[in-house]
Length: 330
Image 1 (cartoon, rainbow, N blue to C red):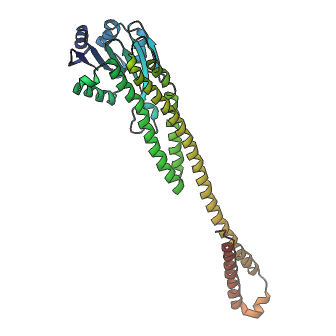
Image 2 (image 1 turned 90 degrees about the vertical axis):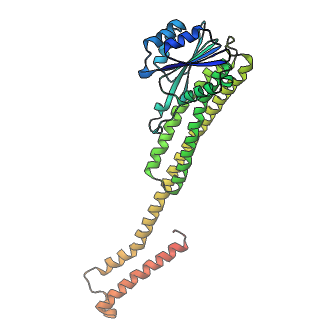
Image 3 (image 1 turned 45 degrees about the vertical axis):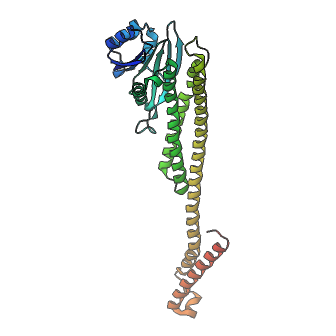
């Protein structure tokens, strides 16, 4: 699916379909933004002609759009700059299948055009598109402003994911300290995988944004360089945040193991106390269980000896419990 929004002499027009967009571009608008959503990871014949012949994009750039890779890229050509950046659009079960939430956004940037190509439906682009239609004098006032808004949303998607991770870590901390369970370990490992995948993608993104933050053959005017430097700095802060979350997860895993050890120690301590308390009972019952006539029989009689043995067991149990309590062993 392909659509475009053109700005010419202060007026805005929205076009759909490759032929209509081409006719609009031939009128030489001040700025045109074309958004291409690749359905089934492929370009239609008209879309291919628009990109390859009408705009003259290199076949390698078009091929990069058709086969996304999780690595940023910026290449300068004679009449345009091609870039590939990556963001995160979370899906329902992103902790288990996080890599499916990572998307690639390809951009073709020229003097009066910006073309975005993506294989997934990106909701933030829809939002920007609607904002451009509502306030074109602000959102479409320059190529740099439009490009900055798009890049800013892509980078901000990492922060939103980090917030989700923070909430999950806080919940796990409370759960682990209260009552550690096996499922907590699985959730911690899922978060660890998410952070590792984020780190693998985010660390390399700075290289792409650095191109737009410096002098780039006049593509970005000097007054807007500071905006793209802000994106570059924002990306650097996110990388530091990801490293910090990685350390938090390692610490959380250590807390989980410590909590499990403490819980196991409490169980072993309880069982040890029970076994130790019952030890005199076993000794006394073993002694009086022998098939011989004990001296106590002549003193207490047969029935009285039974009560004597039972009382001796109770006294031994109470004495050991008092001793353990005095030593603060439980």
